[in-house]
Length: 416
Image 1: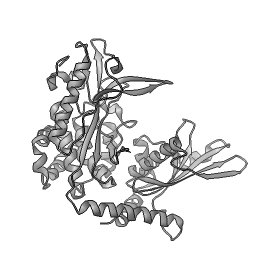
Image 2: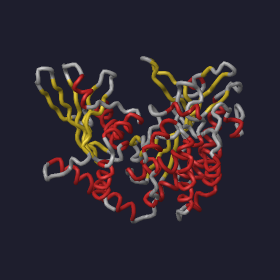
Image 3: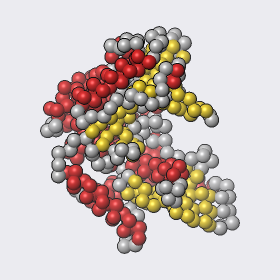
């Protein structure tokens, strides 16, 4: 099926959603929405709006429209290079909004809100109809995307993967977070990452950045080396190392997977969501569900300077070797064969809600069928060694414990 056919099918699925279902989905994903009645009730004054046209998960045009209370209008087109921070912010929100509604192409109208962000006020699922300039922009985008997919499909897909999972250093028994910056530099295979608190940027989170590889076994070897580097630098052996979604309240952790050598598509993102993020959500310690929706939203990705992308939905999978190895293996398997994976339980309203609310009892019945389909893939044998143990955990519905010291599970000793 080509890009145009997929776009038309997505529009038909969108049309089957009621306005209430659309709004509920956006809000579940942490997206601010203003209904028509709420827009009418807003106080008159300056309105800043952005019309964002998205194709193939990338903005192809963004226009800012300023409207005063007197009806005066000012319009300008934003350029990616000269309006980088605003451009990226509204582009990311528009892409997330469309993706949440099952779309990868379309137009989103955003309005600056009092919270300092933007709210969705309208969505057009098929703005490319017609022969004008806008229609030509969409068609050109699709042609380029289709050509890249055709080239990829003519050869064996061998994605290169990397990662940057996080963990915390905690002083017990008071559960005090010790900043990772006390021991680790900001760069390197074992470093620290920042969060912003008020106007201050602090570096409480430890992050492992192993060298990428096309082979799961080699990538996991690189991960062990990054762990060893962290252990050599973190000299205080009394500290507990914790991973997962949110082992300490208010400080969410991520387990980002990096991909290159594979084209970013909505189909790949939805396969990762349904066949990896959903089963992992069943395993996650319930205390970690508070990470969503601000972090860990479905389909969360960032394009990277090396030409690939980073999948950001997962929590930190360093909770155990079985989980980490399984995540790497299943992610690699999906990247190789995502176009053969057809199940989409997260398209159902109740499963979509359950993912964001952490309701394991609703998600669990869908997991066995997803995992069985992964086992039927021709590439499964290459990944089975690491994927199978995690799949067994998922089928049992056994949750991990985010309070545990991960060093015990990874057999890490201080200064090793």
